[in-house]
Image (cartoon, rainbow, N blue to C red; front, side, top):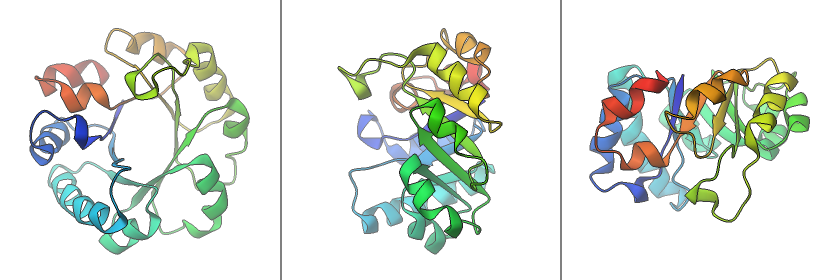
Length: 193
């Protein structure tokens, strides 16, 4: 399974057109990351992305902006671990609640929270975390063993590395740079679907 994490500034072409090509392949979900935008700019973009995702019946998860997700009628949010723990009693209106975490100890604390999936990383070296050592496959395996939720590895995951990711017990992978820059979307996504 594949979750697409967006980063429109990496796109060599029109972001909306690229998002449509991603949605047409029916990934598990799309997380609208876009950390550089103000809340109002993010909301405008999220509305456009939600319309695209609805056309293809692909879940969109709003990253961090809980109130934006509510205002636009988006059923999913993706939160860092600390925000999930802070707002865990206020997320009952969401059907999808993703959480980013960085340790098996955090994963073990997810029981009783509204989290529905885990994003764990970074697994392999990646330009997005240049200079930060990757946590590796054993880290991902330990996260998978610490929670009953589906775990998606993130960070430097390519089609060639995907089988090793799955062998850890992970449900799938999150991919950002590869999907934001590739030429052939269908070919790039096929190994993950």
